[in-house]
Length: 177
Image 1: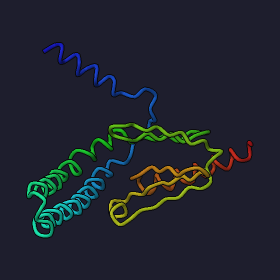
Image 2: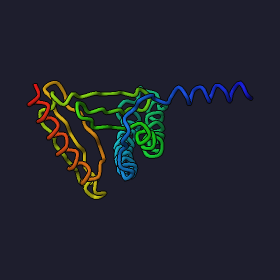
Image 3: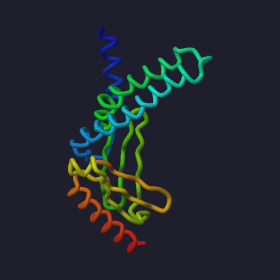
Image 4: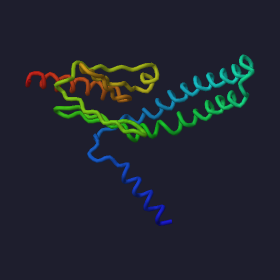
């Protein structure tokens, strides 16, 4: 038992990321991501149902278990997309705006860390669709010549504040060059 416990403790310690960004996504993102997961699950379920009937009626040479497997996997996707993924995304999504860079960390299995130098920032946008708007949230998008990064599900006020802050810091960085 102690061997198993020490292994779990070592695994937990290994999952802690040193020197990670300090700011987190708005807690209301959890509801938004669950709603989006549910909508995606309904679409996957409809595809599973279509695959089941397609295999059963259109291609009779394919065994019925393939259609049943597609249907079962689409049903199992719902709890995964609604209950498991959103809390994990909340746990690992972090960001920090510094004087010379934007530090973004996200991912569940593979945790990606992106540093965007302020001198590379070309423009900053905020956007919100109907679900984000319903919960008073917005996504902040930062564009460079090479790529785009985003910070999802910030409160609209915080997204506007960060947009102005990044814009000012990028302007100052351009003047320094």
